[in-house]
Every structure is written in structure tokens, then in C-alpha cells.
Amino acid sequence: MKKVLLTGATGFIGQHCPALLLTQGYEVHAIYSRIAGEAHPNVHWHKVDLLAPMQIARLIDSIRPTHLLHLAWYAIPGKYWTSSENFRWVQASLTLLQEFARRCGQRVVMAGTCAEYDDG
Image 1: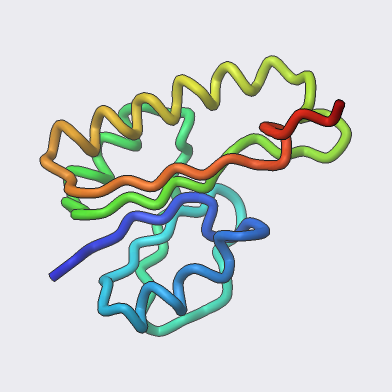
Image 2 (image 1 turned 30 degrees about the horizontal axis):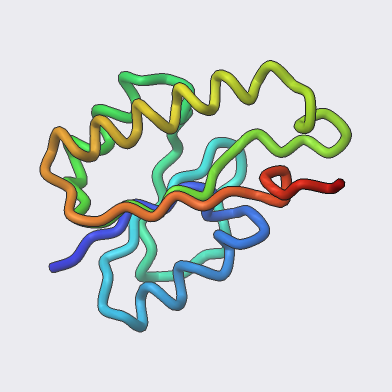
């Protein structure tokens, strides 16, 4: 069975992904840090701090996802544009990708935000 690990599952884009992934036959494992998303009987919710490398490693070890959809980031309105937290999230994303690859994950999609566009 295809298993997808979804980060940012409660975010602007991520909240729409579980239902779609389920219709495509995935076993969906969604990460939350503070508040779980909408209750869905077929989504497995995991409370994980993505900034804690050992939590990432343990979760990937236990799930063994075949796919990774990484949509999580630091997005506090009014702060995220210049926050040093962005550096921590780059490292967290790299750790997540490395742990996923180390356990033979098959496919990764990592999406960015509007912050990547040139506003000039």
C-alpha cells in the first residue's frame, strides 16, 4: 500500500490534501504540532515537532511512508518574511528529506509559499 506522510496538513493548502489523497488510494499520515485537522476516520494524525530531528526519525521509522508531501513551514503573519525561524525550517526540511530517503521513500513533493515570488 502507498503511504503518504503529509506535513502542513492543517495549513492553507494542506487542509485540502487528505481527502484527495484518500480517493487516490493512499494511507494518509498527517502531522500536526498544535491542533489536529478535521476529524476524518481514515486519516492517521501524529503530533510531531518537525523542528525536533529525533521525533522526525521516530515517526518515519514507525510509518515507513512511501511518499512525502511536505507543505509545513513557519508562517506567522507579519513575522515570517524576515524571521530567523526560516533557517530552522530549512534545516527541518532537510532532516525530513534525509530521514525519508534513508528509509527508501519513493517520491517527495515539497511546496513553497508566496514568499518565493519576486514582488518587484
